[in-house]
Length: 304
Image (cartoon, rainbow, N blue to C red; front, top):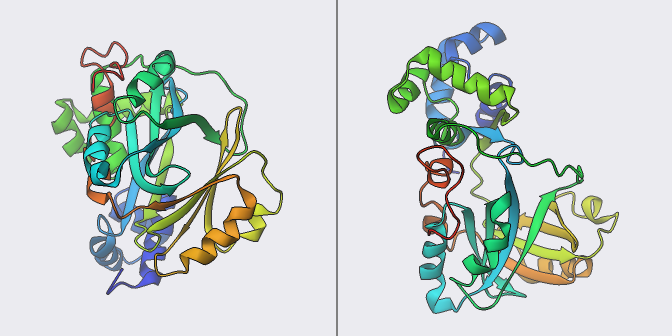
């Protein structure tokens, strides 16, 4: 990020995490801030560097999270990645090179369509592997719900996921509903435990590389050992753990591999910038492409 004030960005993130959907005037009143100063900072950074997005509990929606690793020849990388992103149940694709050369992908799969995953993956490669992944530490909660809302709720969820600060009047126009109806729909999502909150984040332009590893056991010192890095840990059911460390391409790649290889059995490098435009396909159409227009459940993951 160039020509920005990190302190102003941090200030805006902190304020919006406290008041994610309140108007600027209301935030200024609640926090005893200068309204015009707040507006200046907001207009400078919001939607460019700072964003507020809805957080959903996908278990309540009957979706299981998977990570897949697909071998793809380099010359076909973009073509296969684009075809994968045509499928709304494939949320993210990243170029990777290591124990699989090709693509790592994040999928959200309806609980009653898990047995179709092999058929889906064979559309992209004959050489693949996938694992169900859950948050660490695991909750051991296997109570998955399902989709039992109208299609309009899927559109609403996409809007809030893209920009939770979208004005209520704009949402109402897009849904063809009244503002009180939209408020009721948002309240319904919260009461059902689907909408669990909002988060303000800063666009990450520094970490364009990642080291991804699979370990059968999670060593107790791994999180403290790499505390200076941004690290994610996931649980691969029946297999072990998924470890991801994020860093900049300006750093020493060989050193990163050497450091992390002792903690995992499988290792790969992720290149987040290589397929950036493909990853951004359908930015505002996630749930609305998953759900049937009659609202009666999810479309088949084989449709795409």
